[in-house]
Amino acid sequence: MGLSRLRSVGLTLAGICVALSVAAAIGWMLWLRLTDRKITDQELLREAVEEWERAGEPGDGPDYQIFEQQAAQGYYEDAAATATLFRRPDDRRWSVEELAKIRAENGDIQGAKGMIKRFAGSDLGNRATEAIAVAQVGNGDLQGALETAAPLADQDEVLRAFAGRQIASGDFDGALRTAQEMKSDSADQVFYEMGDALRVRGEQRRVRELASQMSDRKLAALFTKLVQLTLRPPEPIDAIQAGPCDIAWVDASIGKFAEADTLVEQNKCPYVSGVAVQQYAADPKGAERLLRSTTNPQDLASGLDGFAVAAARKGNIADALRFYNNLQNLSPANVSGKEVQEIARAWTIRGRPKPVLKWVRSRPNTFERTWGLIGMAEALGHARPKR
Image (cartoon, rainbow, N blue to C red; front, side, top):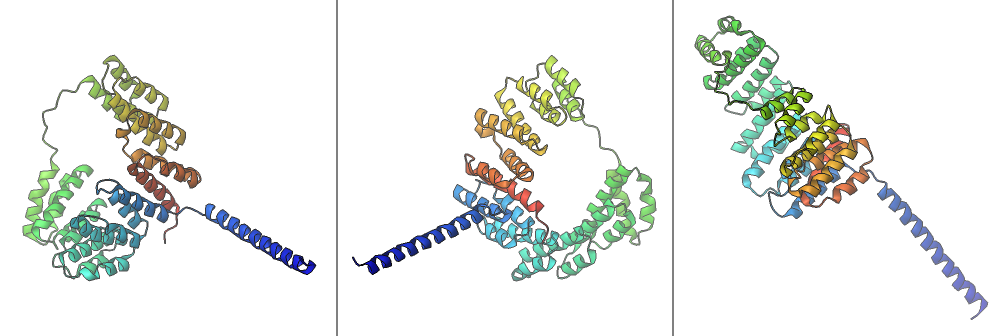
């Protein structure tokens, strides 16, 4: 082979090597970029949908929670796509109303109205319109709510929601004026709610004064009559004699943990998890010691479930994982999914999400993996600024 040909081959090989090196470098940079890429709540929720689809049964996986989380976090198109997977027609109709409501609650009134235009005049369209109007009331926009509800033959639900806001703020005169714009049977609920509020505030004596300011005397008489039913304290009922184990639970609910523990130990209560879970927030070591004393496997499983959730909410990921693993080893059927959700959510908030995602994907079944993905999406979505 001639010298010039050898040089040509050498140059060609060198070129190939350079090209391969460049390609490898580019591939390496792309790999680094992809592996260092941030995990988004939208991607996690889409993965949760895929997990649910793989389950194959409508009851396997928290399908409604995925849909509602997507809607709450502003992924309306994704939520609508998830809704198409609902198998029952009633669920698909519900999803239209629910998505419109959540979208309105998020402040996207025009978007909510736009998505239900094709249902105008139908029963579904009317319910969705009412849901948007009630959401506007919840956001404090009564005028906008009434404008939204104008095409509806009956606006009483919107007015009742507004009266509820007035009652909650102590504006009883305003609530009664709102009630007078409603049909009498719809106003009944407002009167009952007002009676409850007056009793809680200790303002029962205001009934006559409030009734006297109503222009509709027939409705004023109905108000006076109905409100009396809620002003009186409830009739006493025969109480079942509480045993010491019941009293222990009550003591724990009001923070008297030492007394509760003593009653449990003295009376050898067969179920201690109710007391232990309540005690965990204030005294984790004492609560765990109490729970480990039980000889009932079902009671222990119930307590471990509660401990895993409580520890995660306290930000103690190590203990939350320990309790979850204990529960998995003891009784996998007792894993509710709530523990996985809370652990994934708290762990994501406290650290980098990639190890959390690896843990979530390693869960033993679709049910747990789906809940874990939802928990992570909650953490990332709440941290993301509102669009």
